[in-house]
Image (cartoon, rainbow over all chains, first blue to last red):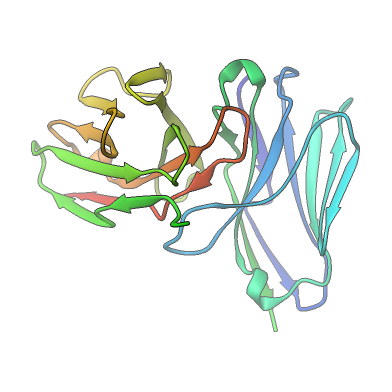
Length: 113
Length: 113
C-alpha cells in the first residue's frame, strides 16, 4: 500500500517535444507529491510538487497533473531540451509519516538534439 | 549557504569491514533523512532523525545498520560487517522542519568487494 508505481522506465524524445511521466499510488493518505530530477553522480533535486487539493500545477516548462479519484499524477515537460536529460523520480508522503518519502522507480529521460 | 554535504563521496570496503557515512545538513536544518539507492532502482527510505533522536527507523535493516545525529557534528550512518548487497548509493537529505522540502546531498557510493 505504500508503493508508488512509475512509468515508463525510460523515455526518449526529440528536442522540442513533450515528455510525459506517469505515477500511480494506492495509499489515499498521501498528501504531498514531489518530483525530483537527478543527474548522474548527483543527488536528487526537487523539481516541482503538488498537494491533492489542486489538479494541476505549472512552473515554467514543467507541469504536474493530479487525478485524485484515479490516484494518479503525472509530470509533463514541455519543449523538452537536451539539458533535461536526467532521471526523474516521483514521490509521495503523508503528514503522519513524518515526511518519509516513498519514491517511484524512476524514469530515465533522454532528449535528442 | 552551503548545501547538504556528504563524505566520503566514494567508499570501498571489503566484506566484513565497517562503513561510516557522514552527513552535514544545511545550516539551520535539524531534520535529517537517509535513503539508499540500489543500482537501477529508486530511493528507499531508511531512517529519519532529529538532533539526538531517531524519529523513524522503519526502513533500516534490523541488523548491522545504525544511525545517529548527535547534538554536535554530522549525522552518521554506520554499517557493520558489510556484505556485497550493501553496495549502493546512500543519500542524506535535510529539511528545516517536517513536511517541508528535503534537500539532498550528493550521496556516498559504497562499493563492497
